Length: 87
Image: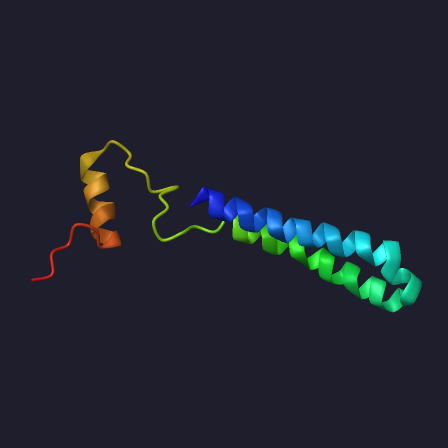
């Protein structure tokens, strides 16, 4: 799960870097407006990459790891619908 998120983060940030470098390397020679537009798109990518990298998957347990208190853990598992039998 972490490898998938890390790969997605690095792909997005690599795309951001590619857009920024290409905008001011050779796109500006063709059109300054297009270079600015590429930079605006590149500006939006880092927050999206951070959201993707920190997204909680359905099987991830970050803040709801067992606390050691059996009664509390049982209560949270009941709220999450874990251990429920549907007859």
